Amino acid sequence: MKAVVITQPGGPDVLSVVNRSMPEVGEGEVLVKVLAAGINRPDIAQRKGYYPAPAGAPVDIPGLEIAGIVEYTGGQVRRFKVGDAVCSLVSGGGYAEYCVVPEGQCLPIPEGLNFVEAAALPETFFTVWSNVFDRGNLKPGESLLVHGGSSGIGTTAIQMATAMGSTVYVTAGTEEKCLFCEELGAVKAFNYKKESFKDRILDSTEGKGVDVILDMIGGNYTSDNLQVLAEDGRLVLINVMNGREATIDLLEVMRRRLTITGSTLRNRDIAFKSAIAQNLEKHIWALISAGKIKPVIYQEFPVEEVSKAHLLMESSEHMGKIVLTFI
Image (cartoon, rainbow, N blue to C red):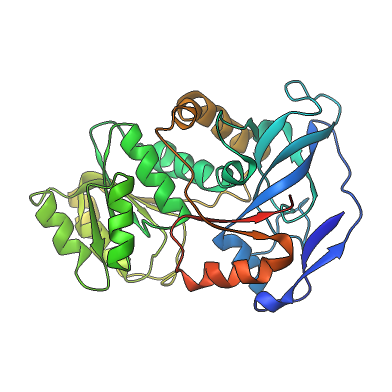
């Protein structure tokens, strides 16, 4: 099969398309013929040598989400059969023509979506559900602040939280991106390069603050994040692009009963990821089929142009998802 491999840690030029042996299918797994694969920030980190694959995943083939056709099923597979169209969260190996996936991490492609759109779902939708709704416990009527609103995670969080009855605020780096986020459903987007999100959030909420913050920035954002949380608010960290260390006022955490939490998804076990898949199918999949939530595709690249796709991801110029195609 054709696969993209990381030949050594480095820039986008270290990615090479090569021929590899087909992966072996085990109990409870399906072999998917990949037609499209989403690109995500963890792929960049893995390429640079900062984010090694977990045990059992291909060590040099990146890719965390795919869409395609079930080609073969292993023993104990109960739901999916050969020929089914699926999208799947994987621990690695998504940048290849074939990928092995635990059955529980597969979902049927929502009605009306093509394979490119479906490939843009798993990583961001699993991440947002797990962190905003499970860990952050966002409820209808509450408010959410999303940093990086125009990213794949951001566009997903805006739509999911809005559809579930919450008010969403976001930060983004250009006026164009702010407008884009508001068109997706954010009630207000703040240009962090021109204004203080802390001041604007407090103004917009009459000093109350927001109930949940989904933060992929970390570092020096942390103190301001805590200051714009409402009482009993929850800060959920999913990345630390501005650094892993921060200074916070612990008395403020105690006084307003704030929660600071976070997670990474890739190293969680199959049962945990399968439970997220079940929740997505129960609560979100019908909203996608009805057109109330949609994957936002910024650009797609043929697999031979994977280096260009990574350059675009690192530029942060995109709004929405970047997808590789094997079609």
